[in-house]
Amino acid sequence: AGKTTLLRIIDLLEVPSAGEIYFAGQCIARSGKQRLEIRRRMSFIHQKPQVFNLSVYDNVACGLRWRGEEKDRIAEKVDHILEMVGLKGYKNRNARTLSGGEAQRVALARSLVLEPEVLLLDEPTANLDPVSTAKIEQLISYVATQRNTTMIMATHDMSQGQQLADRIGVLLDGRLVQTGNATDIFRSPQNEEVAHFVGMENIIEGVIIANNEGIAT
Image 1 (cartoon, helix red, strand yellow):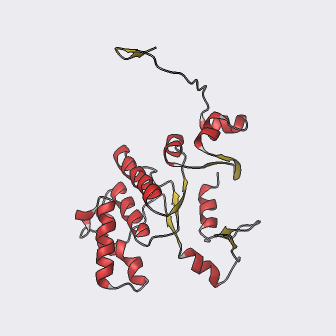
Image 2: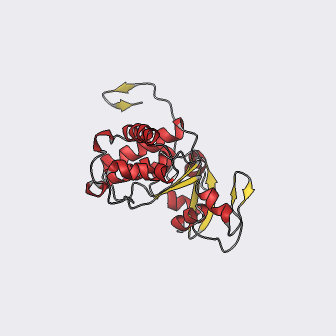
Image 3: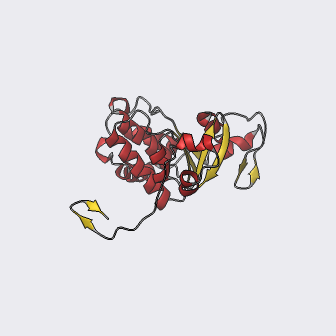
C-alpha cells in the first residue's frame, strides 16, 4: 500500500516524485545540508529489528557517542532508557542473541535515548508474539503520553490503530483516502472501500441497566 515508502519520504530517505515536505512549518529542500540537519531530529524504527553485533549497552549508546556526549552522561542516559524499556539487566548481552521482541526494544531504546522530535515506526510489532507485542505497545503508549515526541506508525492491525493513535490515515494503493480520529474512521468510513478495509460492522450504543450472571440487559 506504500506505507514504508511514505515513512521513508517523511524521514527524507527518498525524494517524492511530486509535492513538498514540511517540517515545523518549513519546506524541506530536495537536496542539500538542510535535509541532514532535519534527519537528525527524527528517528526510524524498522519492521525487522535493526541491532548491531554489539552489547545492548553499546547499541543504545552509539548515537550519543557520535554526538560527542560525555561518558558519564551517556551512562546515565542509557541506564535510564534501558530501565524504561525493561532491559536494565541486559546491557552486557549481545543484542543479536536476543529474541525479536527484546531486539525491537533495544532498537526503540536506541532511538528514544536521542530524544527525537519525530519517531517513525514501520510495523514495529510485525511477526512478534503477543507478549512482545503488548510490551512494545505499552512503550509506544508511554512515549505518547510522557514525552514530547510526535510518532507516525504504519500498521495493518486495526485494533492497534484504535488503541494507540490520536489520528488515523487509511492508505490504500498508495493513496491516503481518509484521515481522522478512531471514531471518524471506524464509525463513519467515507466510502465502501474504507469500510471494507477497516472491517466495518454495525455499532449500536446502549446502556446496561442490569447484569445477571454475565447476561446484560
